[in-house]
Amino acid sequence: MTDTMKCPACNSEHAYQDRDLWVCPECGHEWSGVAEAAADTAQDAGVRDANGNALADGDSVIVLKDLKVKGSSSVVKGGTKVRNIRLQDASDGHNIACKIDGIGAMNLKSEFVKKA
Image 1 (cartoon, helix red, strand yellow):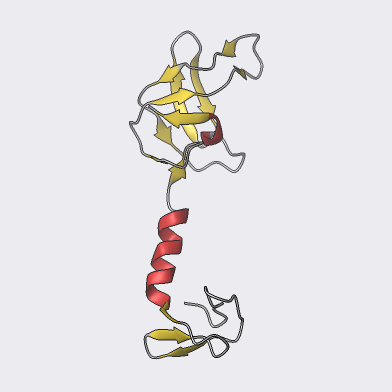
Image 2 (image 1 turned 135 degrees about the vertical axis):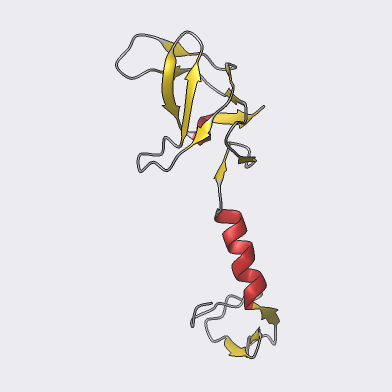
């Protein structure tokens, strides 16, 4: 929990902690900071597809639009089903490693796929 927690009801910065609860003096709203922190980490955890579904290693995904393959004249067509993906941490946004039939090993961005 942080020392500067904002009230989820009125967005006031003057909330204070009272034992296990956070209290807003402006609107009187009380909430549990532990539950809010757990909800934040649950939303941020994992890789999500274009529709917001959580992806995991071994899932199958469908490519949403035609994607040009860098350094090649080939294209991954929209609607292509990719099986057995592997999730990876990548600073360039390509967080899915996979093999596509006819093209080979490549990395995809999760914003261009949906869970099959």
